[in-house]
Length: 168
Image (cartoon, rainbow, N blue to C red; front, side, top):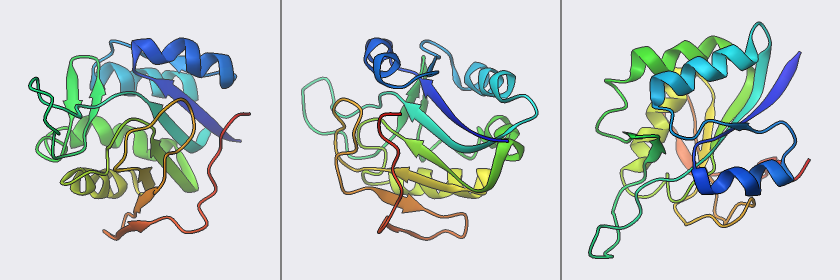
């Protein structure tokens, strides 16, 4: 049985997402290892056709200048192009949970910006699924296009014809 899993990593997003997405799972404050453990616990022996990660990333420095590279926050952990390889043993535990032709969606702000594209390509290879994200800030629960797709084969580009789930 294929499933859609919504994991929320941003404290201020929990109410918004859970009010619009039935079954969304709050994971606020969890580091990457605890996040992976929670996904595995929720999925059990089923397969995910989509993992949507609703959260935040660093978008600006303290002086309010733009941060150049996409990333994703998991509690106090920040996933980015510099540490994705060192986190591979933890992240790859999710690979077996994805159904064929599944995808992961990074539904936070700017994961595809700059070297965040490399992070997305590495995640796609680790999980053997397409990884979707935008280089723009995201508001509420819709995509702020363009949406980019990183493939397990290392390609990266806009997702023409991507099926994007919104409100269930």
